[in-house]
Image (cartoon, rainbow over all chains, first blue to last red; front, side, top):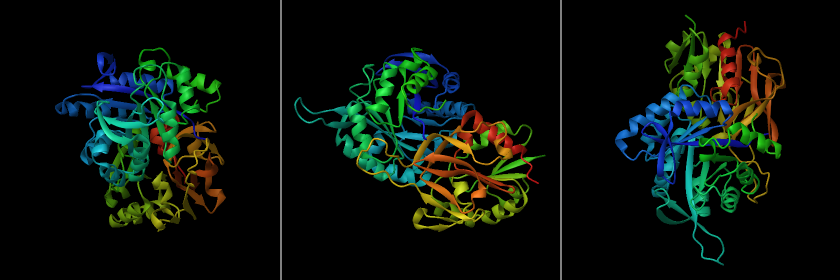
Length: 256
Length: 213
């Protein structure tokens, strides 16, 4: 049977791995090739690179980074951040990315997802959804899609949006809870479960991991196919191997 | 000098496959091309592919690569990967039904869509991620690879070969499906060896050494 996936996420700024909480207090955490190699050796099932470089002029640096990593790491690599059109998708795929993650541009133009999916295959099109609880207390729970790092409201209902963008051609969804991101309080499993139920494609959980139990909860309570985590791996709290051992002990099928 | 040709018919990203083959082929050259004459000179050929089967068959025919593949199928080691495997069957149900190359008797069918009832163990389509391959028959390409090793899959359709003797590997995803086929000098994998870490590299290395004659 298909294994549940553990995916370390690396924030990349001008060709370096950085770590920081919600883009504040950003610190250098090393060379992407070295970090990627370390996670690969620990048993990571895939890697996600999120380019947080502010300037478009630095884009070629990202391509070099992707190329350098792809030359040495033979597990799937997803790259996101600033993917705006098919030329961006193509450039990342030819640099060696296996999938690209599209966020803001999917909201601005859902047909871009259809076009990219039709041209490059839906299996390489990941749509990232940043969602936030917007209901008032005592109202039924409701999540809205936000863009621009969680700053801009779109008015879109997250569950409806997930359904629509999968129809458009998203091959996989990367769902981040803005409420939980950076809190280490665990994923928003209610959100994950609602989205996972609404779509037929795999869902990756993101935002809020602080313990290994949170990873388990993402699978068990959130019903997701993969979990993404950044800080627990970068800060060395746990290795990917330890995470897999823990999950395996609790009955989750992981690649050994 | 020994050369491996990767058939580039414009379907998908050949970067990781090219790099992986370069890494395992030692002194051998890796040629990524759509030119039948250039590819014909290679000692062995890889037919990769992602995307839809109709577009794939159309491009193979337009570039006159279907004849090249047929020629290779008679004369040299030939490896199909993912969609490259699926087009080796006779027929695919994808895109409303498309006749394919017919190097293996049988067809290609879609996994059933998951029910929309939120049941906990429903199976998502595409089948995406790491799954095990049971080696149902011995084959030189399995050399050094443990039975039930993990490989990386991304697909919504799967081969249904007519001849069970052609199945050298199978995988469970709601049903047991043929994830590796072989006969004579032809082998085909539904999974991506170029994204399957060490075992994938070993498989590709075995292909570069494979002497089916």
